[in-house]
Image 1 (cartoon, helix red, strand yellow):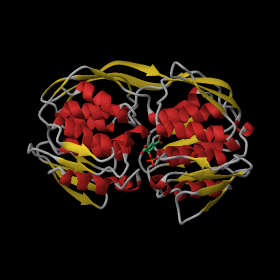
Image 2 (cartoon, rainbow, N blue to C red):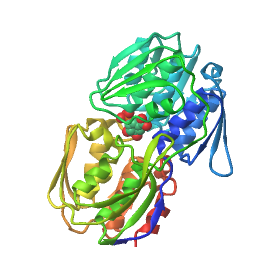
Image 3 (spheres, rainbow, N blue to C red):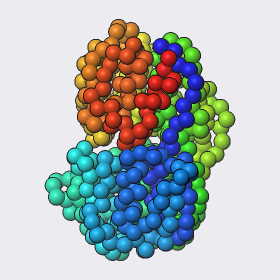
Image 4 (cartoon, protein in one colour):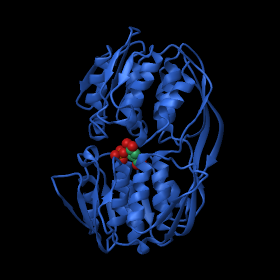
Length: 419
Ligand code: S3P
């Protein structure tokens, strides 16, 4: 299979969620251009509307948010529905923890099974009350309070937990400091700084000093590296050609998978580097080379956590054995991604094994064919969609529509660049 042409990568999902939430906390109107139009982002917009914020989609694809400061948010009259979105749930929890009313957050079956005590613990230590219908997960009720400041040592490297604490500190006007085992994506910190909030980052520590409001601002959302990597992976497995991916967020906390592809031998040109809305961006030109296996450990995992399914698919075509460890978090994503990646690689004829905290994949160039069970997980669908396109189109996906969570136009874009 040859690759050709370019793809306009949709807006970054993490940045789109944060742009909506920070705009809702500002006093004034913000226009968000290039925002991702997907089910997860609709979930955040819906939750904010449920709290009384005006969030209005424009004909040009941008979104206008009219905020009146955090304390203008009002008690919801119905459950807040986060759909399939962990980021929506965990980030909004930080805001709700500091507001004087009770909200109940619900989600779909996959989201309801995901751990939420990881935000309830620090936000509870600040003074908010949480109650769960079950042991953990959604439905979850949050009663906000006048919070106190917090210094928190996170057990897991989670940008969502860090962001929830920063948002709680901002909304309550109290200082917070978050220590992480390994640095995670820093979009919340960058965006808060861009809007005038005093947030400092040093290595694995993020600190918010309260006092300044969040400014209303027009912003542009760069392309999502987690979406771009599917096409980089396709190019990596191609027999020739190249693919151009313009305006992709090149924040080093997000580009781990691209660095891994380079280590595996793939040629990536990083062109036209520039700043967009406080984030570095680049145009990537990706071309195939002979692929070799690699090793990924916990120090690298947060920078490529969402890309591990597609990296596993690339590893199935590389020379040698690829080993991923320190990635136990994959078990509590939209699906148990360790189990599903390994089961599906085997189902299509590749060699793979589960580890407690990762997996091993042995590459080959044998023909691959079979049916993939996504468990409704968008990234499993896209990873195996790319593997199928690169290996003769004999891999079928049980639920192709689940890509709507992060990339509704994925199949059309894939067909366009795969020749
Ligand atoms: C995200 C953080 C990561 C990532 C998720 C988006 C974010 O989750 O997997 O897709 O936007 O902060 P964790 O914080 O649970 O690691």
